[in-house]
Length: 156
View 1 (cartoon, helix red, strand yellow):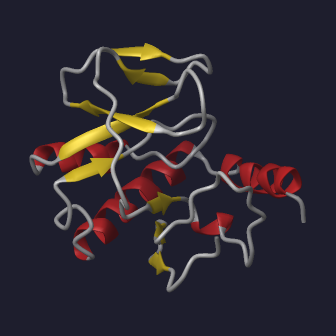
View 2: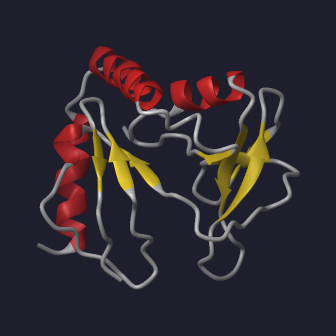
């Protein structure tokens, strides 16, 4: 299956969730993240703000801030494809990027070497294989509302 078709199917699956189900999934993923120590293992943690029915990471972000972790949100590059992250706290001013997604205003972009990458998704978005492009970043794990899926190795 090509990437566009798969994205359309996964987007439809997540769009079927009702608001109460989304809130329940966010709370369940937070409990799993705490149980697995995901917010304890790193001092610096990157998050995203959900758009278009994406899994809501706000509870995880707020918990990490309460745990005095350094939290970062993506900043789209003006040129190139290397994603950078800007540090945020509860008082960070935000501005929409070219896609309307809020980004930290006046944040100095950070780029880390070999970060541990854990995605967040609904369990219904699981797929056997994923088509990928050279610029796609392989994940080390994916956290859902039901479990933490760890990957032993990642294809190039």
